Length: 557
Image 1: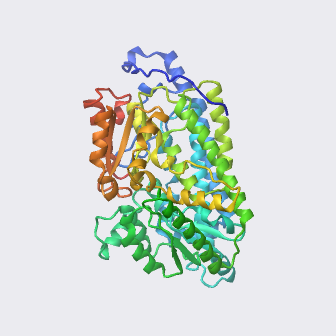
Image 2: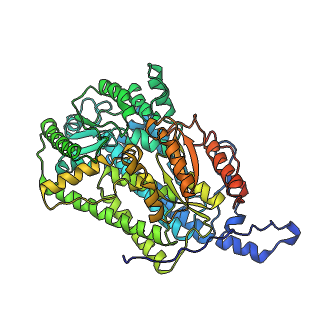
Image 3: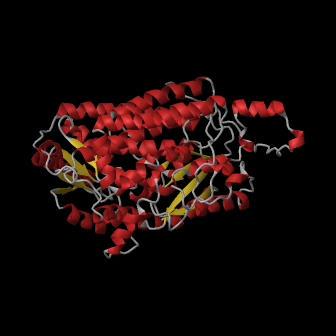
């Protein structure tokens, strides 16, 4: 794709039209709104919600073409492919046994299409085509992983020799251990993260699920002040809610030194061969880099010893080159996002897909999705299609996001015209990996491992934390959504430094307090109120859709 140098348009406040009285009905306009959908200022999306649940009273009417596209290519296509994926990766009986045995599986799978609805609310045209492909990729990857867990699970298949054979050729790892560590063994060996599916995915799809696990770990004496992410991940093991699908496990410090206490509990409850490979804090030090390379080599030896699968250099190169192809397309997407107004992907689709793809590692579904999105992206650029024409502010989101409210950016655009262009975690792995020699490959793999989510730009030193400023310029952003994870000791320590820099640089920044997966500390309604207050009292702006200012979704998924 060629370089893009389009000048960013000036964003003007849209004129909000008063609703017509019954006697003044314009039937020509009604017909137009039926065929094409109402313009943004007249949609009143908040009127669709059932009180407290946030479920829809009726489907959002997007015009004839987009409504039927959503029904056929998002809902029907999504459900059909979920059933096909389950059959492809292990079969319906295996899935049903898992739903009966594991709490998180049924609670997440049954609510997945509502997760789609929240992420795509208000979308039209090319955006309605690009964003669902990202969700389709994440859904396929999720089903692939939990079906691998269930197929190899000795808890639900205790007497099966076939299951035991697959179990002994499967490795587990913490979700922030990059899946690329297992590339050299991937012809014969499966790897599935321990917490990615029971914890990370469930937060986004159904924010009630992980609360049970947080309460469980605190019930055995863990204080409530460590990171709720670490608490939830340990609570899963306290509840014995993780399948026994793996021979051995590779752990990390989850990019957070506050996870040490919960890691000890998990190690005790897992009770299997374990290799610890933590992300270092001072990774810019050349000696630390050498140490990290040695840890990767030791991890490879551990895998060989535990599974009997030999290291395969050719397979490592093949998988890395395939992953590099994904990264090169990501750069093309970023180029369009930063230099034009023709980027069709909304903030939640971009952020979740990117962190999922870059952390788990290469899968066929990522390439399938990228080919679909590439066609849409090219079409938007060639035809100069602006999918978010009511953008008032281009927003960059920094630090660690509220996992229970990742679709806040969909609401923020619909209500206030805040267009979240890029997310900090999306930028973590901003690199390709050399494959021309063993030394170069190992060096780049160590760097990739060191740049784990929440590590590089959250607690990786001031130089990396303040990469915010160059990325604001790179993506043409004029506002920061500053995530304020209340139980993150690292980012809390630099709160004042960011405040000083925002004032010095005259940057508008909204601080969004949250507690990662625990919605009870700061609710979604409270987050919306904070944004509303800033936009009215500081920015002196009027909402695009007043029906979205205040609603109760306290019981919503």
